[in-house]
Length: 272
Image 1 (cartoon, rainbow, N blue to C red):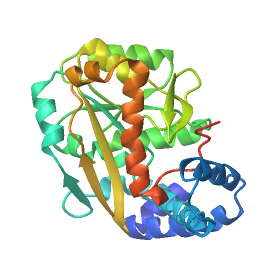
Image 2 (image 1 turned 30 degrees about the vertical axis):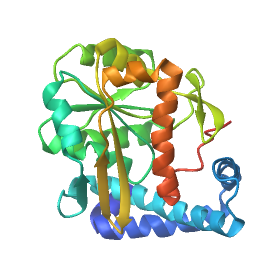
Image 3 (image 1 turned 180 degrees about the vertical axis):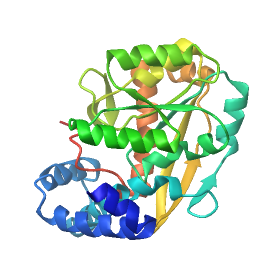
Image 4 (image 1 turned 90 degrees about the vertical axis):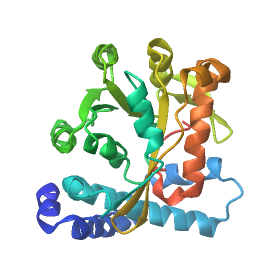
């Protein structure tokens, strides 16, 4: 119902309505206990007033993201999307058979692949399928309609990734900021967490650069997508082992969150 309603009323109205709905939901959500716990871990010196402000703005922002899903194809580079450091993306794509990308649940993370698609490159995104099959089908429809290939997390997904990376032009993106129980022990905001390390395994095995990409909202339905300098296979070897590389990537994500704490999804049980 909401998908079709948001699609009918358009991008700006659906973003606004989503923000309003989740601002109300956020006032009563039991997930705020997790949010408070996570904020206390990440920002132990932050005063309560500032924490409450972050929580309020986070729910509004998350609602906006949900509202924007049915209208992702209406977002345009130059109109709604500002690109920073495009060469950090395009040059590695030209030089390498395969590239790996990572981002986090910040801003509207679905947009980080936008420039690749518009420049004619193919990108496959690893994702965790929602428990609700109808929701999964709907999100898959939105994402594939947007031009992104999808790979479900799991053993079958891992085999699919290997197949893609064995082909020229097989690029893979993933979000690395959520807990993965069978991941590698790493540090995130000075506390031990389990992190998904597939990106490191793939980079080492296939000699691929890793490109960090972050999307942040700067007003209403306007976004900035930044591509950081690629982390080359040579640089990965200098950083160290799998856990050390993931710590390095986690530090990059930490920097994004510190700059825009209201735009990260704090209700995920990251440190459990």
